Image 1 (cartoon, rainbow, N blue to C red):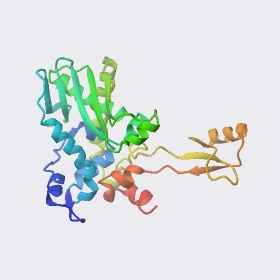
Image 2 (cartoon, rainbow, N blue to C red; image 1 turned 30 degrees about the vertical axis):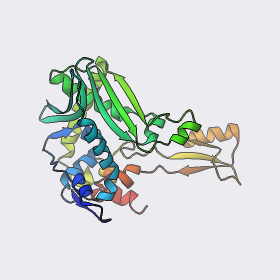
Image 3 (cartoon, rainbow, N blue to C red; image 1 turned 30 degrees about the horizontal axis):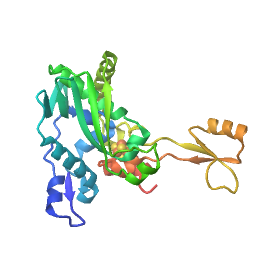
Image 4 (cartoon, rainbow, N blue to C red; image 1 turned 45 degrees about the horizontal axis):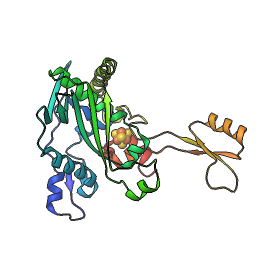
Length: 287
Ligand code: SF4
């Protein structure tokens, strides 16, 4: 990746943004498996051409800084930290780098920096899956894992909101615990095998034929249908389908239904491979 510094930030920022990471063929990290296949493959194919300005990487640098502080602390007697682990799966290797493992409690921990909205919405499935992949690799390596823990640090938490709204996260940090059952390991093993087989098929395809990232992978919550009343700017109700909106209007009133197209937030703002993606060029850029 080419790092630019268009706003002239001090050199320390540029150095922090630079990474000597080079993808290895047939080796995919837990986080790569959880991204869209198109995104992962385009990132690998065009890694040398992708350009990113250091000013757009500030929150990434913030996350790195938090990790850096925490990884310098001394671990307890039964803990070890910041380890790279991997596991062969057919012709491929799945790798992971977790933040802390405690052999006494058989718990794997990862530190995350996130928006407060992640906690308000409570959608932790991606984090649960990531921990489960780490746990699977650790089990394979002979270190049993039965629990996962995320320590989430909310970078945009507002103390005043917490004081005035009891449903708002009361503290800027939250610990989430997951217990892993045999059925969870069966589920994640099946996911890993299927994902790698999809990646193997996609690796043979040209860029424009790669499977387009799913709605979830594009951070798109789908089209919404707003029941509107003439003379009123806000919707009476917003629903997920035209049928549900129609039914609600019949029962509760309203004059017409407005389609609110879902937005591909990932493509628009968070995908480093977007300039090499035909879907982005056709459907998002300039839309
Ligand atoms: S721009 Fe969107 S569809 Fe294209 S690779 Fe990125 S996330 Fe996927």
